[in-house]
Image (cartoon, rainbow, N blue to C red):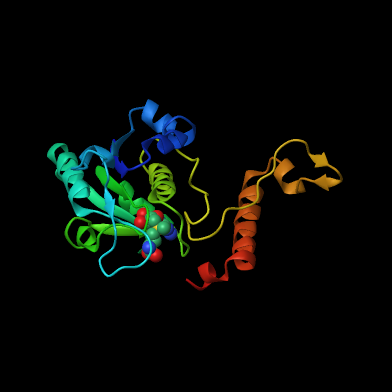
Length: 225
Ligand SMILES: C[S@@+](CC[C@H](N)C(=O)[O-])C[C@H]1O[C@@H](n2cnc3c(N)ncnc32)[C@H](O)[C@@H]1O
């Protein structure tokens, strides 16, 4: 069982993965748990503010240390070993390999930034790992956290069927082979003959070949690796 604690100003956003799809199935099977924590509950003022103006001036607001630290402390009371991951465009890029590594942890806490991000002292003192979903900036860490939870959950034993993910892109260093379903012909486009042959060895060989061709065409960088 893997547990995700999420620190966020927008806990309702997580319904998108808690209620539908693979992650929701994992929760129903008691293989995954997602707990959201409203950061405003840890504010020390009556307006429930958790951000303030940046020292040195400049645009935007910065998320304060105190509420984040108090929330992390509370989470750690129950799960002292929980790894604290800050979703950040400055972090280590989320890859298939990193998703596998994170899936081996029993418990992770995901800190979702907003505004200009969090006070640097949180990163220095409280965060174990910064993770980015790509070289672009989005408006908050919530979507990034959901991408991380989904990609990691797929590697938690039992969440997917046994063979469901074996041929997914990146699993063996290559991209997935092409998929087809009924009908055999549509608008003059035919399913490759070999897939209708029933000859499993030929089908496997064709898929391997297609996987390699697709990777050469779309992702030369993976071939070089
Ligand atoms: C508007 S961004 C702040 C960006 C920050 N000022 C910077 O340039 O590094 C607000 C929050 O969105 C999240 N975020 C934005 N882009 C992200 C990315 N590529 N990967 C992960 N999280 C991201 C982070 O949690 C960040 O604190």
